[in-house]
Length: 161
Ligand code: CA2
Image 1 (cartoon, helix red, strand yellow):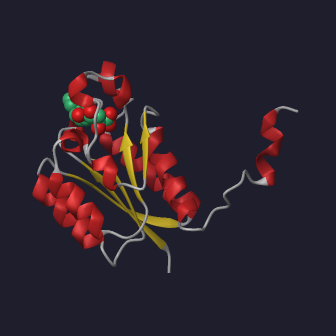
Image 2 (spheres, rainbow, N blue to C red; image 1 turned 90 degrees about the vertical axis):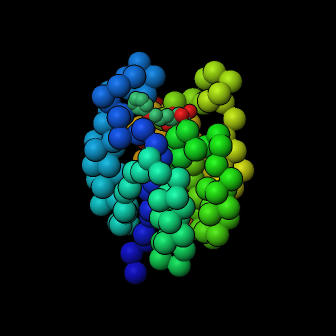
């Protein structure tokens, strides 16, 4: 059966590329979804991609991933800094859970610096822009044992030797 990855996005991310491009860049969430779909084809996995402004809806999606999805990728956005409900829901899910932030939250102001949901995640990626979602997909597939944990021989030529 094909590997299934759920990708969740928290509040206000539906405004990516529309407002505050100086912080989050010009790429829209629809464009990020399209590139995740492209990456899914390349990796031979299936994805479901969602965005919600509601904490409970994100909790419901995480619960629905239990037993039905192999990995979870989530940008909890502002809920990263506040949500015990998301932490508790993440603890239910057994597979790889990768938290993604488009910006480098460690270089942000005090309010945007301390993600509490990352304590319930397997891994955290931040500051890579929209590519963070693709990196998270690759990492999820690798964590599931379906990609090697070393650089494939076919990439060795890229070292420029
Ligand atoms: O860098 C990220 O991906 C964040 O999760 C984005 C969150 C922010 O609270 C986190 O610190 C880092 C904010 C998402 C809000 O997205 C907007 C997009 C356009 C305009 C306004 C907000």
